[in-house]
Length: 389
Picture (cartoon, rainbow, N blue to C red):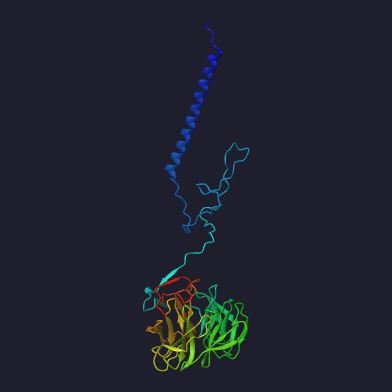
């Protein structure tokens, strides 16, 4: 009888165990491949999830992210060197918080300005008599002839301040209240909680315009006056128009003040210094803004320096270039929709930044929207190719 060596037997057993183990591994791999093939055949490869939002966003330099977008935790002492994934920074489909970077400045090219409005429509639900403002939260405030009414762009409206009367123009102050030429001849501060306070009594103004210096500019008799909204102090600024001053505007640079009048087709201007004091007398910009006994109910200025002046007697809005070139710009088909004043839109909550919103006292104190396609004089972006003053 032959006896086999224990070493040979051990080798044979080891080879037999290795072969069985390899077969088991091959079987497992085959099952995984079969399962994956079945998944692809029945459901297909899932499409990657797209997250809407700006494409330039990326995690900050302080975040340690893997290729899959998840944060990898350091290995624990007892996990044999294996890393563990923490939950994702944000769920798929949810836009992450954006970096606090200012957007690039917008630009407007004055060479693109055309000689006709882009569009015109009525604003449902809004009311305004001779003036209006639009609040930061998107409410237009104007008078129905007796009370101040607030309305949003969609047409919802309600009572803001009852029984204050019709009043004249209004304009926001730097502190968030607005100044209003009330029917008692005062310039009145109106707060957004519907409380009021007299700034200056006895002015008798139609125009209320807050200048680049934060002061209130109004007409009072033969003068353009400047009123401190905090102290109520009043000083005479400019006179010598030959007709009664009625409406006021400023150039984009703040180096000019413009004045429309009652009784003549003339719009005037004066140059201003750094303190907004006149450095010239009132000078004629254009004498073609209406005919004969004209009545200029607003002067607003766009980012390119063009003036928009509605004249009551021919129900026409005139556009005046900084060099005085004058164009009959627009007239409403319905003469009752004549715009008795203008206010720029805010660019939020539906109110267009390149539109003028107008009170219409001869049309039931309604409001019109005249889109001119040019932003306002205080546009914060870059303005290309503006006409020279």
